[in-house]
Image 1 (cartoon, rainbow over the protein chains, first blue to last red):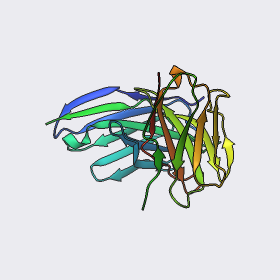
Image 2: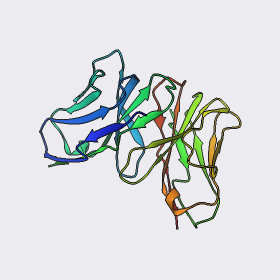
Image 3: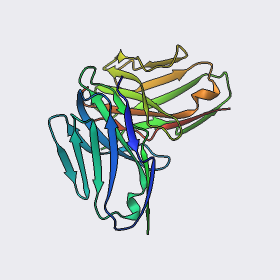
Image 4: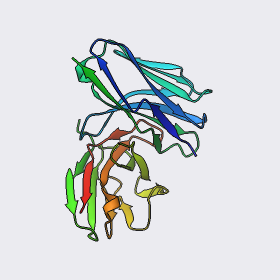
Length: 113
Length: 113
């Protein structure tokens, strides 16, 4: 059974810092991995999608990497801003039965002005 | 264009009552997913539709939960004899096909008193 873990559960940093969020998964046979952002009381917004054949994806100040063999992904946020405060979730899609996403519990990020 | 919409946004019901939660997917999306998110946790898969049929309902917790998608568009998640443990945010997502990125709605917050 695929399990996804995110560390840390919560993170608070001053504005302007670069930071890394971690995601690990137990079964390396994944189809893709997705990072989401969730604001309080809101749904999920997709940030980056990495296919299993890719090593990283970039969008603006965000960079996500994938190391399938070690079961890890990281989300790098450059020059953090207060507007980046949210919960960040990673989710993996299995190779077989690739329909459902298996989520981690999320990292609650607070950027202090 | 319009995203995934869910109604109601909030639902409070008494233990033992029946509830229906509605999801309107993005127009043209053939795949539809339901997830449940408990406080402080990541979403957990409930059921997946491809067209009108439930292709995977392995995440439904018990037979009190049922979902339909009669015309391959709107879906309704039905919960019978609600229990306090059913309290959560119910998220719906849709995608153009079963291996594409999923787009999430804002969710329905269900509270069972």
